[in-house]
Length: 432
Image 1 (cartoon, rainbow, N blue to C red):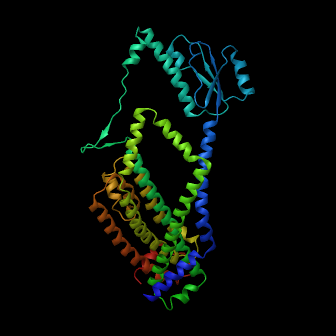
Image 2: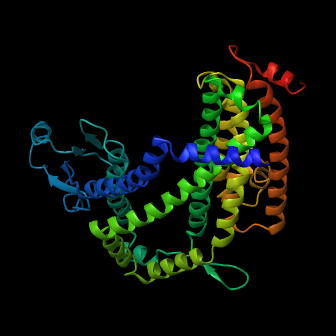
Image 3: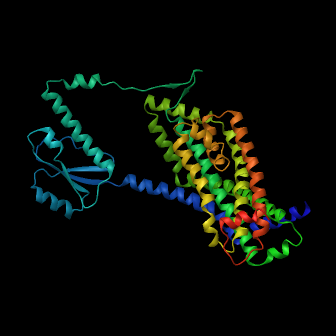
């Protein structure tokens, strides 16, 4: 036990004193906050950009229908010839030219409209143009059939479905997306931590093996103790780094939002959304759904699955590091690690949000290689306590088995040099 403590202490100090570790610990929050500010700034620039679109209407039906909207200014070039309109658009470097030809029927007209532009126009702009034209032609069709447009407009029904559980509590329509955001963020961060700190363990083993230091260390320490010391020492360094990220990131985000006025912009957006009674009610329901989330359970589960998932995958990383001589040789063994993690993310985002209690979501939240990610994504939707307990017990059992398996590969691999092992050879090492 004393040897294990010394190894843990040695690995922890080696990690936290590493220049790269120190730099990235304090630089990562700056990069993250900088990315948030950059995205916000770019979104502001994108919203301020105005596209000028000329339209050439031979029918004369749409002259008063194309009105300036957010980001689009329409210019009437119908008094020119079509060629002159094209030349003018090119010279003035306008966004494009909409050509509406004169046809005998609305059906022919709908199929003959053209948009001239050097680059493909955005989907939102095309949708805006199509909505204007389709609305006008639809009203004309109604008039030709003798239908009263006012009667039709007043007869349109607006449906707003209210969601309520059997206990009488109302929920927001965006409730599932809020739950998916919290669960998805937890699952994604967990996957990134496993990859980052698992690679640290693997690189540490490869480095000591390449320097032949490992031969001296195992003369006084059992290979299993050495492997567990590396995993525990690196995990403590990772937890310290994550805690610093959370604290610094929170402080920087609070300071930058107050300095650059991002918070005031978001408040303005929220106020504009609450002008209408329906939107105000939806915002209130959304806030209620956030408050009703099992945030405490999610935080505790994140810590449990973080530790469990890290131990499970780090033991695999340690075994790979012991089996190879360089990081280049380790690539052939990385697929069995990356594939379950990516599968967990895929199942989480495409299955959990649609049916969090379905067969696919439930099964993958029990499989130890994917449960740390999938179960975290399911918890915001409400999971029975016994499901979480079973998932954790299966994860613990898998950790014990994987540590034993990796230990047998580790104790043989750390003394093997000069040859790339195959899966067949790794299986033979288990029998030694």
